[in-house]
Figure 1 (cartoon, rainbow, N blue to C red):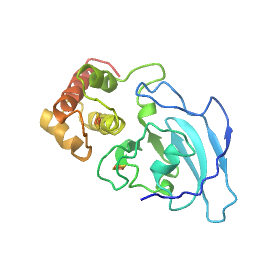
Figure 2 (cartoon, rainbow, N blue to C red):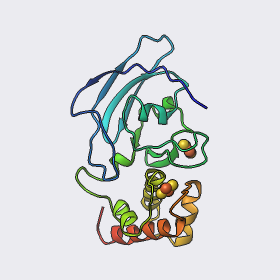
Figure 3 (cartoon, protein in one colour):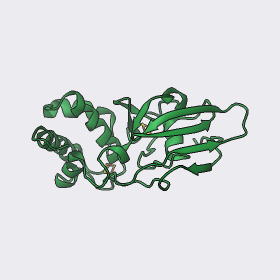
Amino acid sequence: MERKVNLHLDVRVACGTAGECDMTGMVGLPSLLLHSNGDSMSALSMQINGRAAQVHTEPSALLVEILRGPLAVTGTHIGCDTGQCGACTVLLDGQAVKSCNVLAVQARGKSITTVEGLASPGQTHPLQQAFMDCHGLQCGFCTPGMLMTAACLLSKNPQPSEAQIADALEGNLCRCTGYVNIVAAVKQASVAMAGGQK
Ligand code: FES
Ligand code: FES
């Protein structure tokens, strides 16, 4: 089902350039000020990957829609739009959420971390490294959501068992890699992070 969101992309870039994404999270996001002349628009301020962002959007807009639309944080994928695949998972105040299940207005004043913000600029997060080392991805479509769910897990449980990892990733679907390597990757990252990597 195609959703139409009335977002007007008159974007003023306060710093940097409009963000692109990749798994290394090396590209930063500029502060954005978006304008609209729609009467029903809501003004939202939030933090995206540590930077302030302000958006005017319809009350019905989904968080994933403003991320991938006006905020140009396209590492967050849409696999189903029905809350089943987990490809759209981001951290909302540190909690993994499926951003196709969250209204943008629910993120007002909150801190959102997407895959672009997982690692420090120019660095690779241990989870990203482990997914590469353990062949935890093939096409990579599910990977941003897998990484963010795993990051949430490790923030709460730094040394999870394989069963706990599989349980945490239950809501994230992968159509091509298989889950054994993904679980192994999260396990490797937990060991690396326990050794001091961040
Ligand atoms: S796109 Fe959100 S769960 Fe599939
Ligand atoms: S790596 Fe292709 S869907 Fe998971």
